[in-house]
Image (spheres, rainbow, N blue to C red):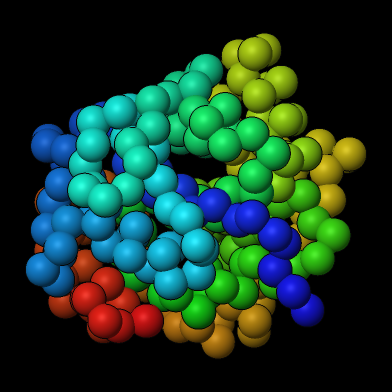
Length: 203
């Protein structure tokens, strides 16, 4: 099975970090910032990577993209889609520091799907997902109508969705650790003591 051609890695790093009290993208974990760690892992899978950080140039050596329409992660995704029209986007939120490279790679080996994402007990993970052109087009349409939630996109009947779930997902590690979301200082401290995938040179 082959990867779709032209996949672009996108680090979602444009959040306002209200619960953290400071910008999450610039926080350090394992000797690198959260944004740089996400970019490094995506670069292990994608030939090109860009940072959707509202044009703030968080990670040197990678293009910095402004937001598109909408708000939140939807705006970051649509900004990337406008900067790179027609390209499938492998998105990873910077505040998911324990998603390993092999899991990201697994998302790209799903032929014939418009949207590929993990799903576990806590629900789907649209901020660690492969977004095809059809999924991005539908997202833009929904945003134009004031709908910004990502997870509910799976309800679109015209969209072909593939889930990475069950034993296939568990093979990469406990989902509760893989998708630990660093939103608060307490969660950042917890992330420091989990078995890490974020350290430079690890996968």
